[in-house]
Image (cartoon, rainbow, N blue to C red; front, side, top):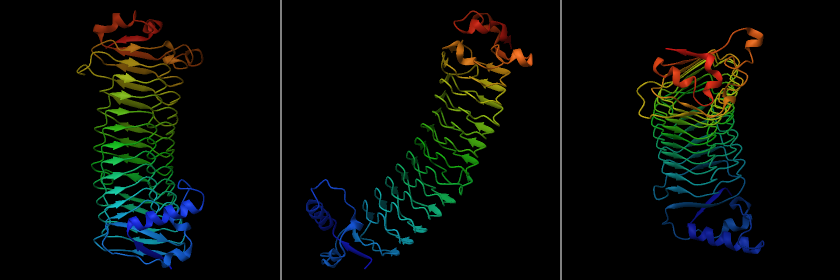
Amino acid sequence: MGLKLYPETAVINLANAIRSAYGGISTSYRVSDMASAILNIPAGEDNFSVLASVVDGTITEFSYSNQAISVITSWTFYDCRLLERVDCPSITEIQDQAFQSCYSLSSISFPLCSYIGSYAFAFCSNLTAACFPSCVSISTAAFTNCNKISSLSFPLCTIIGSNAFYAIGSGVKSITSEVFPICTTIGSAAFYLCHGLSYVYFPEVTQMLGNTFGGCSSLSTAVFPLCTKIDDSFRGCSHLTSVSLPLCEIVGYQAFYYCSYRLSSISLPACYSIGSNAFAEAYRLSIIDLGSNNLSVNSGVIGASAFRSCRSLLSLYLRYSFTISLSNINAFTSTPISNYTASTSGVYGSIYVPSSLYDTYITATNWATYSSRFVSI
Protein backbone atom coordinates (compact mmCIF):
# COMPACT_ATOMS: atom_id res chain seq x y z
CA MET A 1 0.00 0.00 0.00
CA GLY A 2 2.82 2.39 0.79
CA LEU A 3 1.89 6.05 0.96
CA LYS A 4 -1.10 8.19 0.08
CA LEU A 5 -1.13 11.98 0.21
CA TYR A 6 -3.95 14.00 1.75
CA PRO A 7 -4.70 17.65 2.48
CA GLU A 8 -3.24 18.39 5.90
CA THR A 9 -6.62 19.29 7.40
CA ALA A 10 -8.03 15.92 6.36
CA VAL A 11 -5.23 14.05 8.08
CA ILE A 12 -5.57 16.14 11.24
CA ASN A 13 -9.30 15.51 11.40
CA LEU A 14 -8.72 11.82 10.78
CA ALA A 15 -6.09 11.66 13.50
CA ASN A 16 -8.38 13.37 15.99
CA ALA A 17 -11.16 10.94 15.19
CA ILE A 18 -8.86 7.99 15.84
CA ARG A 19 -7.57 9.49 19.08
CA SER A 20 -11.12 10.05 20.24
CA ALA A 21 -12.03 6.47 19.45
CA TYR A 22 -9.05 5.20 21.44
CA GLY A 23 -9.64 7.20 24.58
CA GLY A 24 -9.52 10.91 23.98
CA ILE A 25 -7.87 13.65 22.00
CA SER A 26 -4.62 13.49 24.03
CA THR A 27 -3.99 9.82 23.41
CA SER A 28 -0.52 9.08 22.00
CA TYR A 29 -0.83 8.65 18.26
CA ARG A 30 1.37 7.66 15.34
CA VAL A 31 0.28 7.97 11.72
CA SER A 32 1.87 4.62 10.93
CA ASP A 33 -0.46 2.95 13.43
CA MET A 34 -3.54 3.70 11.31
CA ALA A 35 -5.57 0.76 10.22
CA SER A 36 -4.91 -0.16 6.60
CA ALA A 37 -8.53 0.46 5.70
CA ILE A 38 -7.99 4.17 6.22
CA LEU A 39 -5.66 4.19 3.25
CA ASN A 40 -8.64 3.78 0.94
CA ILE A 41 -10.23 7.08 1.93
CA PRO A 42 -10.34 9.38 -1.12
CA ALA A 43 -7.51 11.89 -1.14
CA GLY A 44 -9.67 14.91 -1.97
CA GLU A 45 -8.25 18.05 -3.54
CA ASP A 46 -4.66 18.14 -4.75
CA ASN A 47 -3.92 21.81 -4.09
CA PHE A 48 -1.96 21.82 -0.83
CA SER A 49 1.54 22.82 0.22
CA VAL A 50 2.21 20.53 3.16
CA LEU A 51 3.18 16.90 2.86
CA ALA A 52 0.77 15.09 5.15
CA SER A 53 0.47 11.38 4.79
CA VAL A 54 -0.98 8.15 5.98
CA VAL A 55 1.77 5.56 5.87
CA ASP A 56 1.74 1.88 6.50
CA GLY A 57 4.78 -0.11 7.53
CA THR A 58 5.51 -1.61 4.11
CA ILE A 59 6.88 1.49 2.39
CA THR A 60 10.54 1.07 1.34
CA GLU A 61 11.13 4.14 -0.86
CA PHE A 62 9.73 7.61 -1.16
CA SER A 63 10.51 9.95 -4.03
CA TYR A 64 8.61 13.15 -4.53
CA SER A 65 9.30 16.20 -6.67
CA ASN A 66 5.93 18.00 -6.77
CA GLN A 67 6.89 21.63 -6.25
CA ALA A 68 3.56 22.40 -4.64
CA ILE A 69 4.72 20.39 -1.60
CA SER A 70 7.40 22.02 0.52
CA VAL A 71 7.05 20.56 4.02
CA ILE A 72 7.16 17.08 5.51
CA THR A 73 5.08 17.32 8.63
CA SER A 74 5.82 15.88 12.06
CA TRP A 75 5.62 12.09 12.46
CA THR A 76 4.91 11.51 8.75
CA PHE A 77 7.25 8.53 8.39
CA TYR A 78 7.75 7.81 12.09
CA ASP A 79 8.72 4.19 12.77
CA CYS A 80 8.57 3.16 9.11
CA ARG A 81 11.11 0.44 9.72
CA LEU A 82 11.38 -0.78 6.12
CA LEU A 83 11.90 2.65 4.56
CA GLU A 84 15.36 2.65 2.90
CA ARG A 85 15.54 5.61 0.54
CA VAL A 86 14.05 9.10 0.40
CA ASP A 87 14.50 11.59 -2.43
CA CYS A 88 12.63 14.88 -2.10
CA PRO A 89 14.09 17.63 -4.29
CA SER A 90 11.31 20.15 -3.55
CA ILE A 91 11.12 19.88 0.25
CA THR A 92 12.31 22.95 2.18
CA GLU A 93 11.32 21.92 5.73
CA ILE A 94 11.37 18.65 7.66
CA GLN A 95 9.37 18.88 10.86
CA ASP A 96 9.84 17.17 14.22
CA GLN A 97 10.23 13.37 14.27
CA ALA A 98 9.32 13.09 10.59
CA PHE A 99 11.66 10.13 10.04
CA GLN A 100 12.40 9.09 13.61
CA SER A 101 13.12 5.40 14.11
CA CYS A 102 13.27 4.56 10.40
CA TYR A 103 15.85 1.93 11.18
CA SER A 104 16.47 0.85 7.57
CA LEU A 105 16.80 4.35 6.13
CA SER A 106 20.25 4.60 4.52
CA SER A 107 19.92 7.18 1.75
CA ILE A 108 18.34 10.63 1.86
CA SER A 109 18.35 13.59 -0.54
CA PHE A 110 16.92 16.99 0.37
CA PRO A 111 18.83 19.55 -1.73
CA LEU A 112 16.52 22.48 -0.86
CA CYS A 113 15.74 21.71 2.78
CA SER A 114 16.61 24.71 4.98
CA TYR A 115 15.23 23.51 8.32
CA ILE A 116 15.45 20.15 10.11
CA GLY A 117 13.14 19.68 13.11
CA SER A 118 13.75 18.04 16.45
CA TYR A 119 14.41 14.29 16.33
CA ALA A 120 13.71 14.40 12.58
CA PHE A 121 16.10 11.50 11.85
CA ALA A 122 16.74 10.29 15.40
CA PHE A 123 17.56 6.58 15.71
CA CYS A 124 17.91 6.10 11.95
CA SER A 125 20.61 3.59 12.71
CA ASN A 126 21.49 2.77 9.07
CA LEU A 127 21.84 6.33 7.82
CA THR A 128 25.38 6.77 6.48
CA ALA A 129 25.44 10.42 5.39
CA ALA A 130 23.79 13.70 6.34
CA CYS A 131 24.41 16.18 3.53
CA PHE A 132 22.10 19.18 3.35
CA PRO A 133 23.44 21.89 1.01
CA SER A 134 20.66 24.39 1.88
CA CYS A 135 20.06 23.74 5.58
CA VAL A 136 20.50 26.77 7.86
CA SER A 137 19.20 25.33 11.15
CA ILE A 138 19.40 21.89 12.78
CA SER A 139 17.07 21.40 15.74
CA THR A 140 17.40 19.39 18.94
CA ALA A 141 18.51 15.76 18.56
CA ALA A 142 17.87 15.81 14.82
CA PHE A 143 20.39 13.01 14.15
CA THR A 144 20.85 11.56 17.62
CA ASN A 145 21.92 7.92 17.67
CA CYS A 146 22.37 7.74 13.90
CA ASN A 147 25.39 5.61 14.66
CA LYS A 148 26.46 4.73 11.12
CA ILE A 149 26.86 8.26 9.81
CA SER A 150 30.32 8.77 8.33
CA SER A 151 29.82 11.94 6.29
CA LEU A 152 28.44 15.37 7.21
CA SER A 153 28.01 18.48 5.05
CA PHE A 154 26.08 21.61 6.04
CA PRO A 155 27.65 24.54 4.15
CA LEU A 156 24.88 27.04 5.01
CA CYS A 157 24.07 25.95 8.56
CA THR A 158 24.40 28.67 11.23
CA ILE A 159 22.83 26.94 14.25
CA ILE A 160 23.34 23.41 15.53
CA GLY A 161 20.79 22.51 18.21
CA SER A 162 21.39 20.64 21.43
CA ASN A 163 22.06 16.90 21.09
CA ALA A 164 21.85 17.30 17.31
CA PHE A 165 24.51 14.65 16.61
CA TYR A 166 24.50 12.96 20.01
CA ALA A 167 26.15 9.52 19.91
CA ILE A 168 26.43 9.25 16.14
CA GLY A 169 29.04 6.57 16.60
CA SER A 170 32.62 6.37 15.37
CA GLY A 171 32.13 6.94 11.64
CA VAL A 172 32.73 10.71 11.60
CA LYS A 173 36.47 11.18 12.15
CA SER A 174 36.85 14.89 11.54
CA ILE A 175 34.90 18.09 11.07
CA THR A 176 36.91 20.44 8.87
CA SER A 177 36.16 24.07 8.09
CA GLU A 178 34.23 22.98 4.98
CA VAL A 179 31.67 20.92 6.92
CA PHE A 180 30.15 23.81 8.91
CA PRO A 181 31.89 26.87 7.40
CA ILE A 182 29.46 29.54 8.68
CA CYS A 183 28.01 27.96 11.82
CA THR A 184 28.04 30.44 14.74
CA THR A 185 26.33 28.57 17.57
CA ILE A 186 26.62 24.97 18.78
CA GLY A 187 24.05 23.76 21.33
CA SER A 188 24.66 21.72 24.43
CA ALA A 189 25.79 18.12 23.90
CA ALA A 190 25.54 18.60 20.15
CA PHE A 191 28.37 16.12 19.53
CA TYR A 192 28.30 14.35 22.88
CA LEU A 193 29.76 10.81 22.84
CA CYS A 194 30.92 10.97 19.21
CA HIS A 195 33.73 8.54 19.93
CA GLY A 196 35.28 8.54 16.45
CA LEU A 197 35.73 12.31 16.26
CA SER A 198 39.42 13.28 16.42
CA TYR A 199 39.57 16.74 14.81
CA VAL A 200 37.13 19.68 14.82
CA TYR A 201 37.46 23.10 13.21
CA PHE A 202 34.60 25.60 13.34
CA PRO A 203 35.86 28.87 11.81
CA GLU A 204 32.82 31.03 12.71
CA VAL A 205 31.49 29.62 16.00
CA THR A 206 31.29 32.29 18.71
CA GLN A 207 29.87 30.26 21.57
CA MET A 208 29.47 26.66 22.70
CA LEU A 209 26.90 25.63 25.25
CA GLY A 210 27.22 22.84 27.81
CA ASN A 211 29.00 19.57 27.08
CA THR A 212 29.28 20.24 23.36
CA PHE A 213 31.95 17.61 22.76
CA GLY A 214 31.68 15.86 26.11
CA GLY A 215 32.92 12.31 26.18
CA CYS A 216 34.46 12.47 22.69
CA SER A 217 37.20 10.14 23.82
CA SER A 218 39.20 10.29 20.55
CA LEU A 219 39.10 14.06 20.10
CA SER A 220 42.69 15.33 19.92
CA THR A 221 42.52 18.71 18.17
CA ALA A 222 39.95 21.50 18.49
CA VAL A 223 40.18 24.83 16.64
CA PHE A 224 37.76 27.70 17.29
CA PRO A 225 39.32 31.00 16.15
CA LEU A 226 36.30 33.20 16.98
CA CYS A 227 34.76 31.48 20.00
CA THR A 228 34.42 33.77 23.04
CA LYS A 229 32.68 31.48 25.52
CA ILE A 230 32.69 27.78 26.35
CA ASP A 231 30.86 25.88 29.07
CA ASP A 232 31.76 22.29 29.99
CA SER A 233 32.38 21.86 26.29
CA PHE A 234 35.30 19.42 26.39
CA ARG A 235 34.56 17.54 29.60
CA GLY A 236 35.84 14.00 29.44
CA CYS A 237 37.80 14.46 26.20
CA SER A 238 40.52 12.31 27.66
CA HIS A 239 42.79 12.37 24.58
CA LEU A 240 42.56 16.07 23.81
CA THR A 241 46.04 17.25 22.83
CA SER A 242 45.71 20.67 21.22
CA VAL A 243 43.16 23.45 21.70
CA SER A 244 43.07 26.79 19.90
CA LEU A 245 40.76 29.40 21.46
CA PRO A 246 42.52 32.73 20.88
CA LEU A 247 39.45 34.89 21.56
CA CYS A 248 37.85 32.87 24.35
CA GLU A 249 37.01 35.15 27.29
CA ILE A 250 35.03 32.80 29.51
CA VAL A 251 35.95 29.21 30.32
CA GLY A 252 33.04 27.70 32.19
CA TYR A 253 32.48 25.05 34.83
CA GLN A 254 34.34 21.80 34.07
CA ALA A 255 35.27 23.03 30.59
CA PHE A 256 38.32 20.75 30.37
CA TYR A 257 37.52 18.44 33.25
CA TYR A 258 39.26 15.07 32.92
CA CYS A 259 41.16 15.98 29.77
CA SER A 260 43.60 13.73 31.47
CA TYR A 261 46.02 11.94 29.19
CA ARG A 262 47.51 14.26 26.55
CA LEU A 263 46.71 17.93 27.12
CA SER A 264 50.06 19.32 28.29
CA SER A 265 49.71 23.04 27.64
CA ILE A 266 47.05 25.60 26.82
CA SER A 267 47.12 29.31 25.98
CA LEU A 268 44.05 31.51 26.46
CA PRO A 269 45.23 35.08 25.80
CA ALA A 270 41.76 36.66 25.96
CA CYS A 271 40.42 34.73 28.94
CA TYR A 272 39.59 36.56 32.18
CA SER A 273 37.09 34.16 33.77
CA ILE A 274 37.90 30.55 34.71
CA GLY A 275 35.01 28.54 36.15
CA SER A 276 35.17 26.08 38.99
CA ASN A 277 36.79 22.73 38.14
CA ALA A 278 37.57 24.10 34.68
CA PHE A 279 40.82 22.10 34.36
CA ALA A 280 40.31 19.62 37.18
CA GLU A 281 42.05 16.27 36.72
CA ALA A 282 43.91 17.33 33.60
CA TYR A 283 46.81 15.25 34.84
CA ARG A 284 49.31 16.02 32.05
CA LEU A 285 48.71 19.77 31.95
CA SER A 286 52.03 21.45 32.83
CA ILE A 287 51.74 24.95 31.33
CA ILE A 288 48.72 27.27 31.46
CA ASP A 289 49.11 30.72 29.90
CA LEU A 290 46.29 33.16 30.66
CA GLY A 291 45.48 36.71 29.64
CA SER A 292 47.46 39.56 28.18
CA ASN A 293 48.16 43.18 29.03
CA ASN A 294 45.76 44.62 26.47
CA LEU A 295 42.39 43.16 27.48
CA SER A 296 39.40 45.51 27.46
CA VAL A 297 38.37 44.40 30.98
CA ASN A 298 40.06 45.26 34.26
CA SER A 299 38.93 42.40 36.47
CA GLY A 300 38.51 38.64 36.37
CA VAL A 301 38.26 35.53 38.49
CA ILE A 302 39.62 32.00 38.84
CA GLY A 303 37.00 29.68 40.35
CA ALA A 304 37.13 27.06 43.09
CA SER A 305 39.04 23.87 42.29
CA ALA A 306 39.88 25.32 38.88
CA PHE A 307 43.15 23.37 38.64
CA ARG A 308 42.45 20.61 41.12
CA SER A 309 44.56 17.49 40.56
CA CYS A 310 46.55 19.02 37.70
CA ARG A 311 49.44 16.96 38.97
CA SER A 312 51.92 18.18 36.37
CA LEU A 313 51.16 21.91 36.63
CA LEU A 314 54.56 23.60 36.93
CA SER A 315 53.90 26.93 35.22
CA LEU A 316 50.88 29.21 35.48
CA TYR A 317 51.23 32.52 33.63
CA LEU A 318 48.91 35.39 34.59
CA ARG A 319 49.72 38.12 32.06
CA TYR A 320 46.91 40.49 33.02
CA SER A 321 47.42 44.20 33.67
CA PHE A 322 45.24 43.76 36.77
CA THR A 323 45.21 41.33 39.69
CA ILE A 324 42.81 38.55 38.84
CA SER A 325 40.79 37.25 41.82
CA LEU A 326 41.23 33.77 43.26
CA SER A 327 37.88 32.66 44.68
CA ASN A 328 39.22 29.82 46.82
CA ILE A 329 42.63 28.47 47.83
CA ASN A 330 41.46 25.00 46.77
CA ALA A 331 42.00 26.04 43.15
CA PHE A 332 45.43 24.38 43.38
CA THR A 333 44.59 21.35 45.49
CA SER A 334 46.77 18.37 44.53
CA THR A 335 49.05 20.34 42.21
CA PRO A 336 52.78 21.17 42.37
CA ILE A 337 51.76 24.74 43.25
CA SER A 338 50.37 23.41 46.52
CA ASN A 339 52.38 21.12 48.83
CA TYR A 340 50.86 17.94 47.41
CA THR A 341 53.40 16.78 44.85
CA ALA A 342 56.45 18.55 46.22
CA SER A 343 56.61 16.01 49.03
CA THR A 344 57.18 13.25 46.47
CA SER A 345 58.88 15.00 43.54
CA GLY A 346 60.71 17.82 45.28
CA VAL A 347 59.52 20.23 42.56
CA TYR A 348 57.10 23.08 43.16
CA GLY A 349 55.08 24.85 40.52
CA SER A 350 55.41 28.58 39.86
CA ILE A 351 52.93 31.39 39.21
CA TYR A 352 54.35 34.00 36.84
CA VAL A 353 52.97 37.56 37.05
CA PRO A 354 54.01 41.01 35.75
CA SER A 355 56.65 42.63 37.93
CA SER A 356 54.36 45.61 38.55
CA LEU A 357 51.80 43.35 40.23
CA TYR A 358 54.09 41.01 42.13
CA ASP A 359 53.72 42.77 45.49
CA THR A 360 49.95 42.94 45.10
CA TYR A 361 49.58 39.24 44.35
CA ILE A 362 51.66 37.97 47.26
CA THR A 363 49.38 39.76 49.75
CA ALA A 364 46.05 39.42 47.90
CA THR A 365 43.15 37.41 49.33
CA ASN A 366 43.72 33.66 48.78
CA TRP A 367 46.75 34.32 46.56
CA ALA A 368 48.79 35.05 49.69
CA THR A 369 48.59 31.35 50.54
CA TYR A 370 50.89 30.73 47.57
CA SER A 371 53.13 33.79 48.03
CA SER A 372 56.29 31.71 47.80
CA ARG A 373 55.29 30.39 44.36
CA PHE A 374 55.18 33.78 42.60
CA VAL A 375 57.80 34.75 40.07
CA SER A 376 58.08 38.21 38.57
CA ILE A 377 58.22 38.53 34.76
